[in-house]
Image (cartoon, rainbow, N blue to C red; front, side):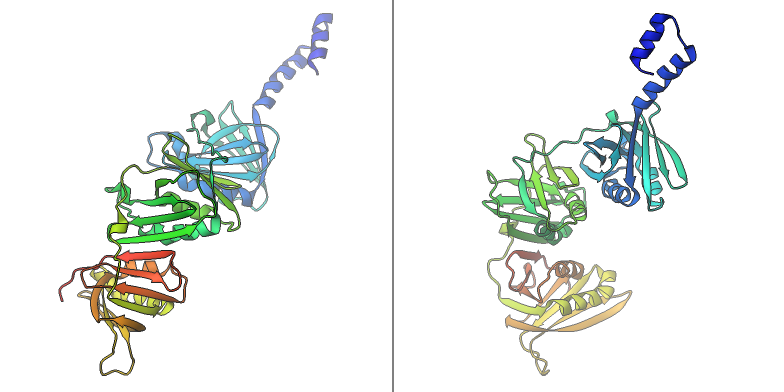
Length: 412
């Protein structure tokens, strides 16, 4: 019944009370409902992307929720802990606009256990609830108003720096593992990022090792930039950005102390870390007395074998680098050994090409192993000076990556 017909009925005095009641009752209910139909696989993927930004320790209940909101014909899922925010967009058949926040744990568990079929999401803003239908399942979840969800900043594509996803992910993987996980030194939990012309350099350190990666980005920013980005945020970005051919847009909103990474179907925003990053370039040795070339795969295997014993003894491993193997006819070699009072001892010999003086030096074997895991070249170069000075590990034929490891002081 149209508004005109209802008006004519009232004017003529021929009012049907039941018809008027039903018309006025049902009309606002339809307007209050948001309805979207999505595929279960896409919904599960989107939920898994954003759920990592949810916090369970906040005093604000809405931060334990995921925002579900329609956005220009797609469904947007967002979560934030006020330091890290992640949004994902998925295709949907949207009939009405709306939004609501839903408890993350409940929604994640529910979506992951749905059959691989179409999922109908119906949001009732009046009752602040979300109805989920899929197959034979019909579930209502109580939520919190979308208006209570912290606003997510939008990226400025005009001033954004375009980055190749594949190259940027490789840089993240090369440095993020070396950042500290101790909150007592917040500036060491981040990755230092600096732009000089069209070259980007990233570095991370926990005070015992330094990982440095650099690459040409093919696009010169309007000015030289420098930022300290949480390593966790970059690790999450590496997990989200799966399409290596895609272009990633990175922007720094003026005066907000934030960085935004924008992809086609996802966006990550992170607070920048305040504080000074160590002057790591002053720690890098400028020359070395011993240069040892080793097969990357063989050295990595030897490190993993040695770590089994070394992990019970503070991960201490001794590297005995010998240009000549003495009475042995094996030629130049490096012996890696570890001893633990609880477990035992281990020695493994790795063939090497050694140029320089013999050296006995001790490193944290876990640090050595983690650095080798991100080196893709067939051979690796270990450069050293003395037992009490840093050593440097880098891929042979690739100057874009360097890893500096501090030696460990042990009784000889």
